[in-house]
Length: 203
Image (cartoon, rainbow, N blue to C red):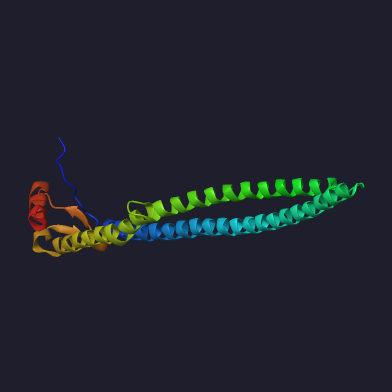
């Protein structure tokens, strides 16, 4: 039956692992920056589009107001002609203009409402991402707190192992490159080495 525990015989591997942990933290931070830039860019683009729609709606409402005024003038002329007993002007053109202007206003009102809903949903998603428990805070915790902590703990283990390999306790080890043992003397058993390592690390 295999004995529990980890037997580290190459400090260089731990160094490489530590470098991977540090680079992973940097990558997570870069990803977070990219995500924030992207979603903020989407929000800004939606706001610009919504402002454009608002301008189109204002223009359509202005045209509707002008068309309704023209229709009112025409209808007043009809009433005056009717009172005088003479044929009045036709207001069909003005009525058509008012109808077309109303349809244009309704179109831009619908688009503006849709734009508002989409922007609100986007802002909600951004708020959830940036808020407590969101992706932004999670990545910050991992990259700014957990990653440095893991690297610090691993660095401590590396320093202790280097002390172990340099101590008289491991004098019967033939050390290879990077402080890693190449060969173990049979007189120093795995049980003894594990026992001494546990004492060193207070396990």
